[in-house]
Every structure is written in structure tokens, then in C-alpha cells.
Amino acid sequence: MGASASEYAPGTGLTTGAVARRLGVSPTTLRSWDRRYGIGPALRSDGRHRRWTRQDVATLETMCRLTSAGVPPAEAARAAKERSGAATPDADADAPGAPRPSGRARSRAAGPLPLGDVRQECRGLARAAVRLDAPAVEEQLFAAVEEHGLTVAWQEVMVPTLHAVGRKWASSGDRYVEVEHLLSWHVSGTLRRHTRPPVRQGDAAAPGPVVLACVPGEQHTLPLEALNAGLSELGIPTRMFGAAVPAEALTAAVDRLGPAAVVLWAQARSSAPLPLAQRVAAAQWGVKGARRQPLVVLAGPGWLGRSADGMARPSVLKDAVEMLAGLYRGHGGHGHGGSGGHGW
Image (cartoon, rainbow, N blue to C red; front, side, top):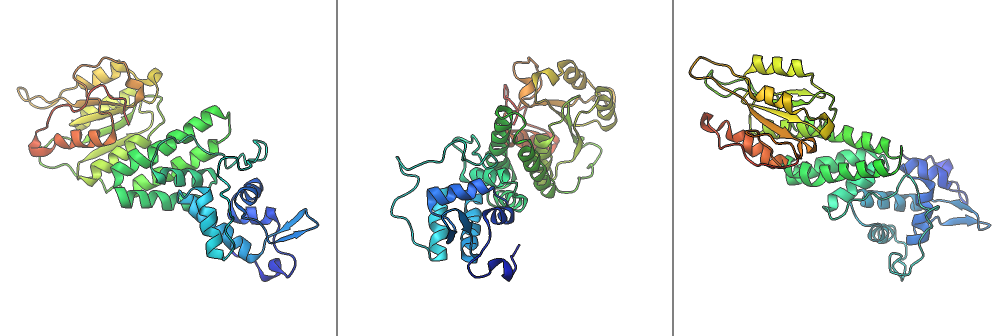
């Protein structure tokens, strides 16, 4: 969003607060960038009042774009200043011994997420999410799916970033809840945009659809949305029931649909009802002598440590997609796939 010419009147420029609002970052972040990387305002009056010129703001916009794309801040600062024609500092502000802002001075809103060893795209996505930069989050998610495909983008970009936000939320009280909600919303939107329309049932002898449901009380639907999207890419019929499906409703749906498989997601051990899974696995339909039963797939960390003979436990999304696709190859299958996994 551009500023009017009057905002950049000679000798004035924009205040730090005004620039921060325009860019969607905190004033503390701008001051930190100034101290650490020399990305600062050209106009300073009496040593206290700071005013940002049009060129200053353009440099900051470049800095924001690069950090959102996962470029480390020191490298992004050098590139931003080079593009603006500003001088590059002689010393790297990230070098050992360089002055660091105190914990109090560091921006609370832009604090780093505990990502660990992950793809570079995760870092850019995390920075955009922490800044609540929805357009950048959308762009990063779209680019990840376009470059890596849905399954890899989910496993290696979306999930690590979601987990990092969750850990930050858990360790920070009520902070970062808004970051988790925004990121989850846009991940869900990306998955839905890459989900093809539902496939109609084939001939009567073909396997039924794959039923996707969270167990009663479970609200975490994103992993099932990812699986639904992955199966839709292969033209496999699914029925998505989403969050917190009551036990009676689930068993009624199984009886009506005669599914080839039922995927039950449980995030927490306390929400993983093994008796319900066994009840679904025991369902039967079809003519006498040719009765069918569904393959029950236990997905999610809630099933860890549960003994469930005859039920599948794929450890990652890729394994789940391949295993379920096998049920439709020649109306056959290739077994129950992975075992002992923790869900994806």
C-alpha cells in the first residue's frame, strides 16, 4: 500500500510506527534490523526522532520479501541494500561477537520458531506466519506444492512449520495462538484447492470409497484433508466426514457405504477409542459367501502403543496414499502397508 506524496515531504518522511504498520512488522523489529544490519532511516533529527524516506521503505519492503522467502536476515539485508544502492557494511552483523539486541528489545511478535533442521521453505513460511503476512503465507504454500508436489509439500514444509508453531504456542502461554490459527487456515485452503472433485463409485464389484473421519472429540482435520487431497489426485473415491465424528454416526456411515477402508485420526492418546476401531473393523456387508470388511487405518499419534491386530498404521502421508491406492489396483491390494507408525 503506497504512501501519499505529502507523507514524504522534504525533511520529514515516515515515522517508525507508520512504516511498521505499512509493512506488517513491529517497530522493535525495524529497530533491530537497523542495529544489526544497518537497514535504518536516512533522516534522524536531534539523535532521537527517526524518519524513513521512500527509498528507506523500498529497502525494507525488499528485506521483508526476502526473509519471507526463507533468506537469512543478514543475507537479506545485504541484498536489500545492494538493490537500493546503499553501502554494504564491512562487517557481518551476524558474525560471532557482533552486538545483539537484548531479549527485552527483540520483537515479541517476530520471535523465531523452533524449526531445527528443515527445508529452507519452512523458514520462509514460519517468518511469514509469525508476521501474520497472509499473502506471503499463501504464496509460500502455493510455491511449495507447485515445486514439490502435494505429498512432499505436506510432509516436509507444512507439517514441520505447523509443529514448530504448536511448540511455540505450548511454551509461550497464550501467545502465538493467532499465528497457529492463521497458518492452519491457509494450509487447509491450500489442501482444498488441490483436492479434485469427489469421484463417483465405479461398477458394483469395485471397492467402496475410503472413509476419512476424526474420532469422537478430535478436532485436528488437517492430516485427513491432506490424505483426501492426495487420494483425489489418484482418482480414488473418498468420503470426508471431518472433525469429531460421533461413534454411532461413523458406524452408520460404514454400514451404508461399504467402504474399502476407514481412516481414523486421533491426535491424543486420550481420544483414541480402540473399541470403536474394532467395531468398525468387524463390520460386514455383501452377499453370503462373499462378505466384505473394511481395512481400518489408525492414523495419528494418539494410537501409539495401542495393540490393534489386522489394522494398518502408515507412518507418513506417502505411505498412507500408496497403501490405500493398492486397494484399487485390479480391485486387489497389497496388504496393510506399514505398521507401528505414529501417523503423519
